[in-house]
Length: 154
Image (tube, rainbow, N blue to C red; front, side, top):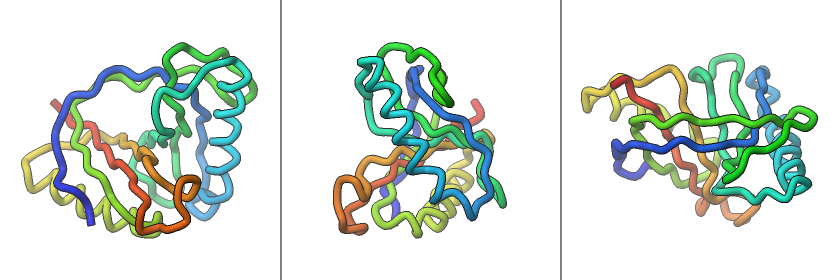
């Protein structure tokens, strides 16, 4: 279900983002409009994405999602509407890639978190998902790829 996880160091990443706190049932309704809004703001400012978009969750989702919808950028964005400038700080992380439809993400996260624990790592409260290939790239969910990242306590 997931690729073999790896532990690595990440660098600081500038972001343009929208913070959201929504009930689990509303996640599919808010994601599309939020990411389109971030892309529209950076495009209006002449800023190109510096990689695929991602969600940065401040804590593991429960009945609510407390997260940021983010696009990495090379230069800071000027705040506009709900979009603001941010920084995803460098961290030691465990990462893997899940291949498949979004409905399988919960099981992939379970498998990944089991690996983290079994390999003696302690995760921080936050996590992120980077959407490498999704419905905007391919109509076949079997080809979708989502990077799962969990910062580790050092």
